[in-house]
Image (cartoon, rainbow, N blue to C red):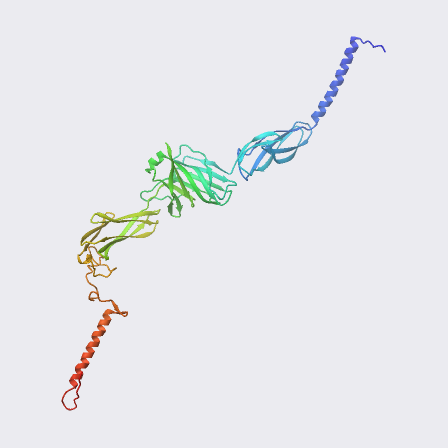
Length: 459
């Protein structure tokens, strides 16, 4: 068969026809593709960059349909490549939608969140977190939240850093009875800005106040507090004198407070509290009122004992140690420390023994109490006084006299009782019996004689 020869015009015509057909086919294909649904994940966002163990955490995913007809897509949410949630979504043509899935993290860590391999964000999961919710020149409030913390061991919670404040909590360590709770803690750098009734006893200086809005689920806390050195100086508080105090009704309990760090600009203190609804930083002093003081002496085996006794009342807001020193003739003879709770009274007794006769001037904490005179007889090797009786000459009202001899007038060495009967009564009975006997004898002798009717009587 011979090949047909075409003119250049025919070839051009055929080429144009073929191109037109190709364009029609391509348009049909493109039109069909544009009409079909086409859904893709284009991004999203996380609820926050931090989460708590056990909390519901929201992940938002955006799905776009670039087709002109509606269609569906299964969205898989992964955590470090492991699927943790899935949802089927239907999106109309030429539109987009967002889905929100709630997920839970069982363990702390850093996790990369993706949806259908499209990265959504990074989240750091913790067991506890503290966030500042409000801050002014006078105060700073924080929300401390926990999730899945241990209930067998203390757990440390770092507090957000603070600048240019007289004091700030840096660490909050909880001893918890529940693994999740929320506490709202407020620092008052201006104490008067709080609603707390502050102690105003003499020698008291309050630098700051801490209040805790909720203590449920927490048995005790140990707090680490940084106090500005300038604030300490302005308050007139020595570094080792500052303490934390917990409110107990109208009184305050001093917490065992220690210095754990000394910085150029601040001193860091640490204290533990089981009652921590309201705390203050500073110094609170007890107020001691000393009542009437009594002075007396009592015998000992080889001399006399000088005894000073007084009542001490603490009218302050905090318990304190009353230090008492007894001096005799200007020299320290005895000392004691007595713990006196706020609003209560305690009796303080001090004593010292002397073995030499003389006058003894007695003072309590440099305040004269009086003087006593001890005689030679009272410090003899064998004292005539019964142990426990108060004797000796006291030169102030309320003394017990010189005490020489026994008050009942019995001879020395005579026992106080005979067969359980008072010696005085026994002696009196014997005397009466002898009188009756000799009286009867005299009558009988008178009735005897030589006269008529007489009778002879012989003893």
